[in-house]
Amino acid sequence: MTGPRHQPLAHLALAAAREAPRPDAGVTLRALPYQPSIILRGESGDAAFVKAFRAGLGFDLPLAPNHVSSHDEITALWLGPSEWLILGDVGPVAPAGQGRLARALAGRHHAIISQGDGRQIIAVSGPRARDVLGKLCPLDLESPDLAPGHCARSILARCGILLHPQPGGAYHLHVARSFADYAWRVLAEAGLEFGVAIASGD
Amino acid sequence: MLLISCPWCGDRSEEEFSCGGEAHIVRPVTPQDMDDQAWGDYVFMRRNEKGVHFERWRHGNGCGRWFNVARSTVTHEILAIYQVGDDRPEVPE
View 1: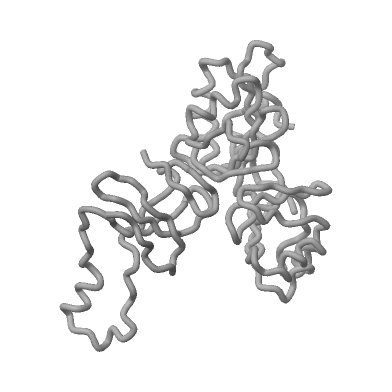
View 2: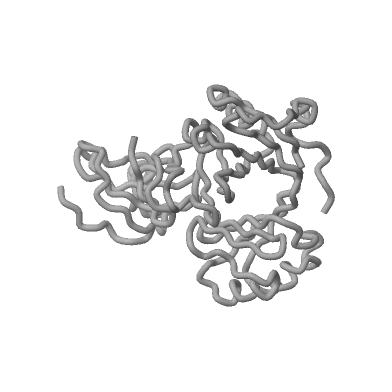
């Protein structure tokens, strides 16, 4: 897979806005670089489908709601009982049947949908990361259901997100690229009272 | 604000959901045999309960799934949550 034509947040010139580490910043925002991703559809209850996924990628698809599993640079996030986001390079999606996941699932009832460069991941970290998200998102961020290893789709202000908690109290927010500008600005504004630092995208 | 217990995701804020209107409306099998009155009733006429209302909800900003809710239109209390296709549950009036 090739990278995006241009980053969804390129117009904000974040590389130029990048700052030296600020010890006083309560929250650090970082626009993560492009990462290949697909949506996988299939039935949780279809044992052959679940088994074929394991054969293809070497780890188990998360079947419990809002769980994440990963192995060898590939991460699978539960989005719904028949829907997963697979982050990482699982091989070409089109033409059909070329990638290792597509080969493993061939003949099974499923769909692999390339996400292209349609998504932007914003990393929110720092000691007040949870406080900033708590102002914008109705999820119970203190719940053990949102510890690392879990994920949840929800909303951030008026924008749909996929929240992926990371070790150390950081969060990865997945947004559609057309909402990336809005999500970035609303996070930066919500973080003002705690001090916002902008980090390198790498 | 309602706290709605999604059958898959658990308790979530009402903001993540959208209400799909009255549940248990079955599409007629032979609409060609219906007169305009009966077809109009099917398309447009809905119960307007004061009390228990059975309705469809979708966890749109979540797992994306539809499910059914029994809700009191008087108190806003959610009395039961059940799968699409299941019969109306017994709930206290």
